[in-house]
Image (cartoon, rainbow, N blue to C red; front, top):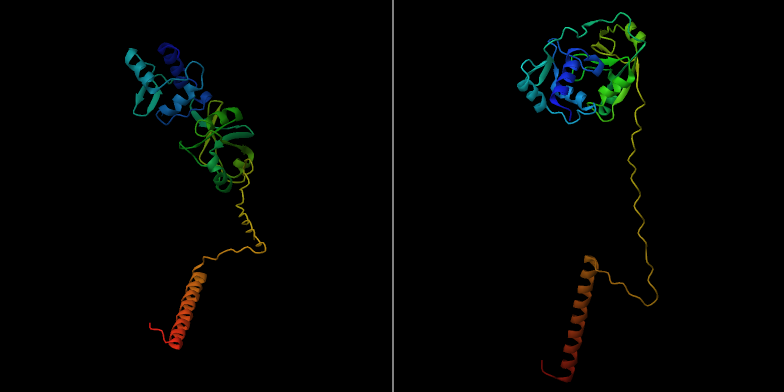
Length: 242
């Protein structure tokens, strides 16, 4: 990782001048989430291993640190050069934003709503929109907003610099999205037929089912009774003793 001095200057530049360029939107007090800032920093060569502890170390090591931290939020101490959020008088014809892959169907059916911010964050640059999207989803879905249609439907846009545009919601009918992936139908495979083996001549296959076993026992019992009766009759005829 580059030195803390380089990191300090880089963070001060992002927070104090170029939030929009990196797809970051401050709250009304100029704060952004530290976890979002760390994702932005990690996208730059030389700063991929930066952690919150590094930001804390800068505050402790520098007499007048260029940023301040409050709980999970961070902001520049000097925000005079940050562009203000103003009404967008002439927004681009197309604006872009991303939704999570899991929210793809919901967006198509219900429209776009803020996620993680108080407003929907858009950009006139599809590449920047995708970069922002990849910070919360590995495979984000890019949405293209037709601004003219949105304005006709009463959507109002504001902007922060030349990169970021904001609005409360985007209704269905004024944006396009990739087609939903086809759902795989669950096909129940037919069970393989049981192969019947025909007995060869002279072969015998015992049947051990409960029914057959019961009949077998009854047959053996009757056989014993018949044998005993024959033996008794023979002894009565010959006069033998039992």
